[in-house]
Image (cartoon, rainbow, N blue to C red):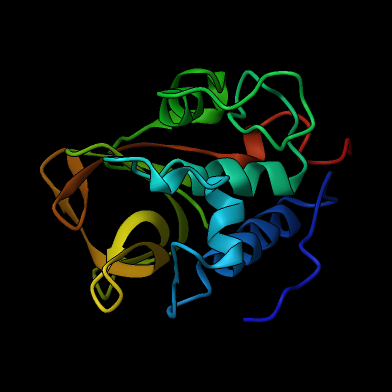
Length: 195
C-alpha cells in the first residue's frame, strides 16, 4: 500500500469522519496484508515502542488514528508525536480511551451497536481495535488491530482481521472476547465541524 494523503478534521459530516477513520486504520494495517515490526508505517504507528519486551501495540493504532483525524486533546491522546506537551506514558493507551473520554465512551448493551470507525474495547484479555464493519447476518465483525503476531515473519504485527460476532445472553462477543464498550468517535469534541 503506497503512502497516501491521510484525511484530517474537523469533518463536515459524521460519515466523512467515519470514512476517514477507516481509511487511516486501513493504511496503518495495510489492509489484509498487514504491517510488521520494521515497516516504516508500523514504526510510525507504534512510535518505535514495539521493541520493548512484552509490549502490546493494540492501543497505539486507535491513538494514531485519533491523532491523524485531528484530535489534540491530551486527556485522551497518549502519543509523543501529537504536537502537545505531554509525551507518551506507559499504561495510558487503553485507560485514556475508555476512562477519559466521558460521554463519548459507550458501555455495551445488547441493543446498541458500534459504528464503523469506532474504537472497540474487548476483554479478556483487554484489547482495543478500530471497527471496520459488523455483518450480523453472517455473524462476523471486521476490525483493524495492532498487538498481533505475524506467523510468517515471527514479528509483532498489525492487520485487518475478521472474527466471529454474536450475542450471548446479555453480552456481545467478538471472537471469544466480550465487547465491553466502544469509543464513539462522533461524540469526541472537535472532530466534527460545528453545524
